[in-house]
Length: 275
Ligand code: KG4
Ligand code: ZN
Image (cartoon, rainbow, N blue to C red):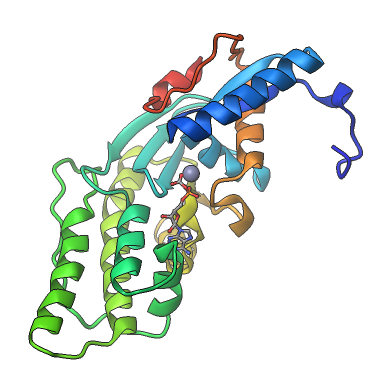
């Protein structure tokens, strides 16, 4: 408030993540938000974590609908279609691991620091995609799957170790990343063709991935010239409070309210976000 040269009187409401996520973290946030709402007599607005990631894009661009969001985080990989403001339809999602989770695991077996995805991204820049890895086969046309690819990396390393064969970690990081991103973009392309949205946004921590940003900005944007592509600034990709505030302001306009019985919902569904 000090930085924005504002006071509590300028605040319309207190937005808080209700779910999904780890119960402990959600609980702490909700208790703090309830206390602030009570102390300053402000309405309480529960927000879905993924709605926050999608609306992070509203910090840099006016969202246009219909909109397609490719949500890529540590816990989610899904294609969300928004016919209108604050309306969410999940077209497809991962059947096993989220892409962020798979990247973190690959980072761990390559002995990279946590969170692995960030360092796999850096290392991949120095390598070439030369190692053959398993191609996942998801069920639905808009669905994703990453556990087969992740296991393929683990098995590759185990095979090399067993036979005392050396491998180039940068080439393995690059091979994994190219496979994972091509797995991500195939259903996305199909959804763009089928739904013809006005805008496509990236959302979630993995939106910080440099190669994914390049593929969306260069390849997808060239393939679909009528669609506006938006990528959140790096500071808004991984979990942050501003994204919950901006989604909260839209939810507030749509009449979403919580009361003092509001509780954490670790398995909250995106369609429940509508209030
Ligand atoms: O959205 P987020 O901050 O938390 C969840 O809601 O899960 O996403 C965290 C995920 C982690 O898996 C992390 O490795 C991944 O985002 N991540 C990246 C990059 N930066 C963060 N993955 C690939 N490349 C990156 N540059
Ligand atoms: Zn997140």
